[in-house]
Image (cartoon, rainbow, N blue to C red; front, side, top):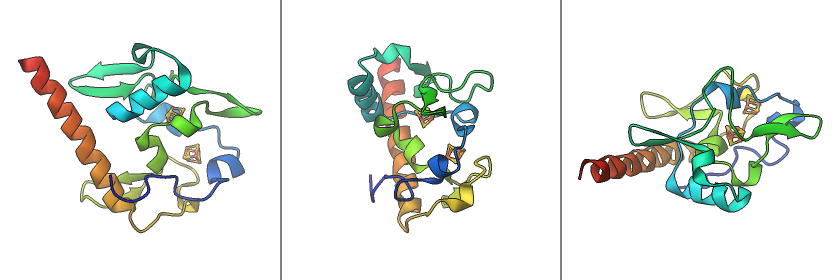
Length: 148
Ligand code: SF4
Ligand code: SF4
């Protein structure tokens, strides 16, 4: 992974400042790295099976991207809704609302109502490409292992 892979702006980020109800955690599938799963198991003491969905070699965060459901880790934070595993959240959540466009560059996801309030570091495009490559490599390894 190149660059920081850290949130786009110093805390507090717009999510907190704007008291956003985190629609992003309902709308988007979140692919997981093996390292994300390991970190979340360590942070929550939950078995991986309780928050990971396996799909065609991918590992996806359970509930995220399912409109009526939402990420299993979205819950009550302060007096609103937010991420209950913020410090251990997956790499894909750390880079959002900057996402990889089809042309390989970073773009702002317009589903985030405050997308233009995030500061994008200069290396974000490289970070997103590296993350995508790592996710695809891990998926490829799992598919190969299943085929053996
Ligand atoms: S990333 Fe955007 S949609 Fe998600 S919680 Fe933050 S401000 Fe809201
Ligand atoms: S891990 Fe946290 S930031 Fe990521 S989708 Fe779930 S609730 Fe949202």
